[in-house]
Length: 331
Image (cartoon, rainbow, N blue to C red; front, side, top):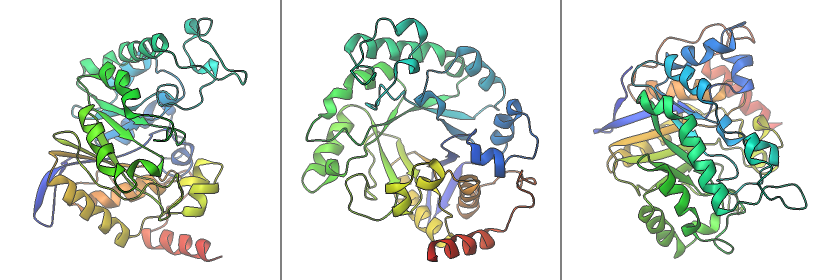
């Protein structure tokens, strides 16, 4: 499948994928009914050239699994690995660590692991070891560091993530900040310059419109030579702020008009970066794969084989899906 897109006369490598391949919504509505779990990644890789590994946020992947993933994907397919919640400054329970590290780790009174220098380095080293099959197969593209909203400029400095960034070299690490104050007014340039100094790739987002502290604006920037990164979270503000499940927070049916806006953002990023990674995170049902496939069409890419009959039965047309979503939002 081709990954070179030309939008408005701009040529550049645009790689489109999803933030997971095993989301429960995909299994219910996108994958063919009755498909074995072991066959899903291969089926996914017939339609997209890349994926974000999401399970690594909850626990380090197992080397036997990563070897299987390398075998089940074609040449040219790549993974971006989401870093463990401890490394991304989220609350991490003790049982999210490798078994042999649990007795050595300190915890808070609430049972959350305390991130210490030795543990940070150990987790980075273990992660690299478990991912070695992907690296050897040339299928490890890079990493995603999605920082906690609690990681604010009032309480933290970006220099705190330098150990993480250095531990992942020479692979690129895309940095997604989730506290709006990082890009407010005069701090915006300071933040981008700091990520650039660390060798990180700024994560641009497509998110709901709002000025709440956890809602990031649509700021597009290239802070690492040759790489831009865009993640799409949907545009449902109420769900984003109050939803308790993935479907509630990130459910969104992108219209062609909205995807056209995304195309223009991608085109502008492609003017500065040799490669733009576009990852859909609107993971309710089959919202993400349907939108990602349509974006590939709009950008002139081969979208791969058409979707089969999903677990929910005959799939609706994109127009029907948009009409249904619009009706739901009007209720």
